[in-house]
Amino acid sequence: MNRLYHVPLSPFCRKVRLTLAEKKIEVELVEERYWEPTPEFLRRNPAGKVPILRMDSRVLTESQAICEYLEETVPNPPLMPKDPGARHEVRRLCSWFDDKFQNEVTSKLVYERVNKKVMAQGYPDSKNVKFGAARIKYHLDYMAWLLDQRRWLAGDVMTLADFTAAAHLSCLDYISDVDWHRQPAVKDWYAKIKSRPSFRTLLVDQISGFPPPAHYADLDF
Image 1: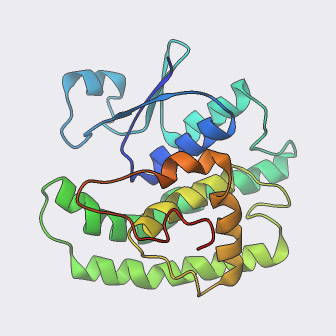
Image 2: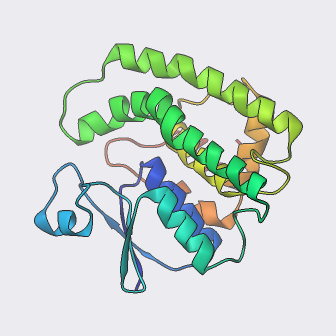
């Protein structure tokens, strides 16, 4: 049985979960307290990070590398375009969300509001929370600008870039930190992603002590 070591409110883990589900690859989910690493966990990934995918006798790490491995080994349905320029745009946007958005928004809101309590690392830093709340507006505006020119974030077909962005926004939506009224185009885009069968497992996630808002699992939010 394929096995994914993950934490539920990690955008990197969610990105891999979406890719696995979209490609109809069954996987057993195993929650991993990576902040309390065991020797066994560090043998799987010496970097001490999740997600970790055990598949076909391989141990795969790093979310982007995992997703591209899945794309190459299970090409249907495709999540990367064939044209080199289009593939570059997908990778650019994946990096945008996994690097810039993560550093400016996700880490400032999800980590401060949820992870710190779960990891017993103290109280939220209000400066970080304010910074993340301000920066998400810029990113939503940028996404709306992209969607004004394209059907999906990286082009006219859905790609891994859309799943990467949706993974981050779904974590923030779980804690009600997305103003969906700011950019209707982004809300419409997210509604299309959210309604896909591959998204269902994310919508039933529950983090102890942090119940999701009522609209989180509502497809007509």
